[in-house]
Amino acid sequence: MEKTVSSSKKKDSLPAMTLTSREVLEALAVRLGQESVGPNDAQKRQRKRSHVLNIEKALFSEQVDFVRDPSRRKAAICSRRSGKSFAAGRYLVKECLDNERTLCVYIARTREAAKRILWTSLKELNQKYRLGIRFNNADLIATFTNESQIIFTGANDASDVDKLRGAAFSLAVLDEAAFFNINLQELVNEVLTPALLDKDGSLVMISTPNSACTGFFYDITEKGKYNFSVHRWTVKNNPYMRHAVRAIEEDIKNGILRPGDPSFKREYLGLWVRDDQDIVYSYGEHNLLHETPHSDEWEYVMGIDLGYHDATAFVVVGWCPESPYLYIVDEYKETQMLISEVEDKIKRFMSDYNFTSIVMDTGGGSSKMLLESFKQRSGLPLRAAKKTGDKVGMIKLMNSDLASAFIKVKPEMELLKEWDKLQYNKAKTAEDRRYDNHLSDAALYAWMESKHFFFEEAEKPPDFGSEEYFKQLEDKIEQRLLEEQDTNQYDKELWGEGYQDIDLWAN
Image 1 (cartoon, rainbow, N blue to C red):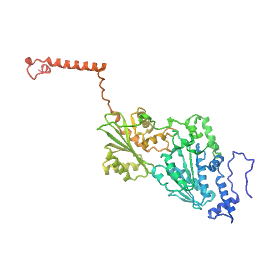
Image 2: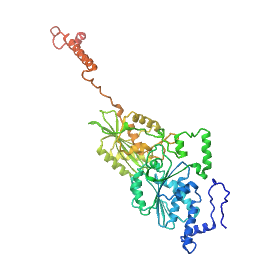
Image 3: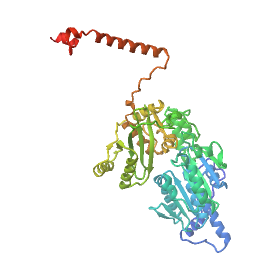
Image 4: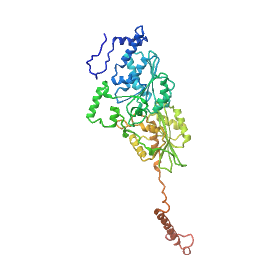
């Protein structure tokens, strides 16, 4: 006999998690690779419907509405702990169970984030329902018994994005879409949209809001652009997080959380609320560089932030005697750079700029070894980046230069895109690790090494005909008359040639 849920159960109760005997048999049939437990097509269709029920059984109503929405373009703007990633995971599994030999992709900000957020939970789901999924831990590919697959990947830079070209997906999910460091609209328009055409696939984007209130996901969910079906829910809608809701209410009562704060509205209510105080680097139109002054005495410094899975970033700054400004003139970043590739890149930069010094982050032991290796092998003017122990304090000083317009940046630089998104953690003790800061760190190291603040402005001559002009002219005439008077006091006939006034006192 099948177990059923009593109709008297309250609407806000947890979704039923029990399995019927038929569902157990059908799950076993799938694991064994059988088409169905019965001979006819009606039973096959019933098997599919049962699997849908199995997968959706743990979802609450807002998640179910999102998964079942027939729109081919949909987005969910949610709070923290709302279960948006959980729903996306069930959606991907449902797509693979319903369709043989289909291909889906789950894209997080980085490959490591994709593995952390959903890869492990998919393994738990496979064990619970005995789905028979095969996991390739090296490539992060999950293969179902019907040969459908889910690819887990990141989109940290152009090389990650290029790996997705040429595929044919039936479902593409972008998680934390508001926090991608690449151009999200280019990823959607140039890579994912063509990849979804063959199978008339669906594009799904989920995220919490960012503090900058900018970007492709912001335009979709807040401005209503591009005709996406937009869903919204928060942690309060999640019946599995009632303990979290109680903790939030307790923190509000104790004054730890303030409902009026922009960060509270973003994190716990899923609302787009801008907060410039959370932004790490504050720049404006006055910092944009449109032309550099002509000088034969430019000095250049390059800052390097080393990484491997995270990008290695290079930023070049320059200054000259004719200007009080620091000019950020060049940049580059790439993931998975080998030591030889980093060295080659430095040498290419050296061919374009005669660096006074090159400063490199040596936060880890391997970085210090790399620095010494570079210095010995190449003779490059490498130095360890200055670490004061108060990075936030140094950022504030750099922000002071930005506010005073002493730093100029080319408008098209990727550095500005980092600055647009990079924000502090909740305690404001460091940058939020969800955002890229590699170019930002390289720029900070270069700024700390620069000497643009030694600039001394030359005295500007007064305008011709002005009161200051005539006063300066009078002073010059008076000074010349005094010098002539001193010269005329010397009597050559009395003292002879070669004597001076000082000789009167020396004898």
